[in-house]
Image (cartoon, rainbow, N blue to C red; front, side):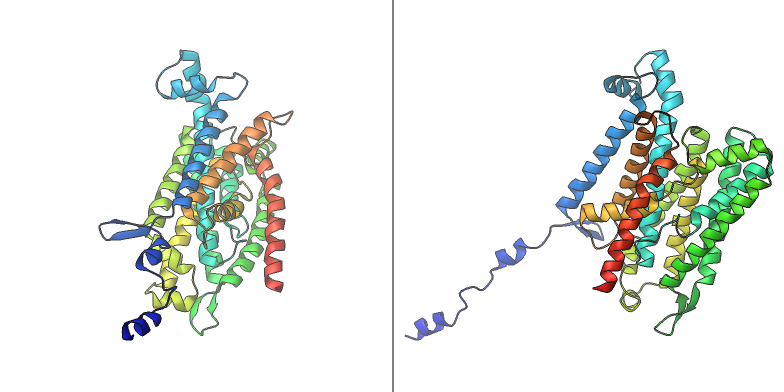
Length: 376
């Protein structure tokens, strides 16, 4: 009787240990580092990488002299004829690799800035970073007669673009400094976005003024660069952008946990032991340098840094902007835009025209979505 009464008191729907574990994602541990394994996200990243490789091979194969995809892979592996190796290795490969590096750099920079500022509209091109890099590069292009050609020219333009982007970022950062709602001194995120938009407009006016002061030849050269074109991409312009992307990836990987913590509110981030202002400055410097060198390589490509993190976030269904996936989506966007610009239209268009044409409607979509969230 007592046993029967005791059995009746046991909850019939109590979860077992197996049921509890079943809803927990598996974890991967390497030494002191551990992470939750999300199978869906991993498969999505693999699919993005496969898509990027397919577009990369197709971008090399398509042109005035068409080469079968199988032959492209053979040449990349060391085979093929001398003519095929010349077309692929000396002409098309630097262009395709530059598209990948520039797109990945802009996607990574956009993911970092949007994560830190908690704003889907925060990107290097809207915050004035790209305009600052453009201003520095155009000043060199029109002020020194184009600075010649080759590696020295590429390094000169890259250094000027990097300096312009960094100086612009420092100016915006200082102007956005103030007293936050909690009474602490620091960067006010919403204020930084507004100041960045204003600085962006001012720098675009400076670029236009520089073009009016240049000779006809230098102005034409600078104007072609300002449209964002891969036509002049070569190994000398690829190397600085690749170095910038590599450094930004290392900094972001080393600050992965900090970047995740910065996505929370100020109080939560401080409780987690993160030095907010220092970490913000380090990550923003990496993003700015990466975006500036990418801009120096091919000119300003609008909306790539804005759209790539938001597309990656929706594909992976993550609460924040995923850095690796954003870089892959950015690379896919630039390579795909280059492919469309050379094959779909009657005349070959600069890749920046295609990214702007696609990114403009996406910006309107984000504005409408943000406005709806604010009014709910």
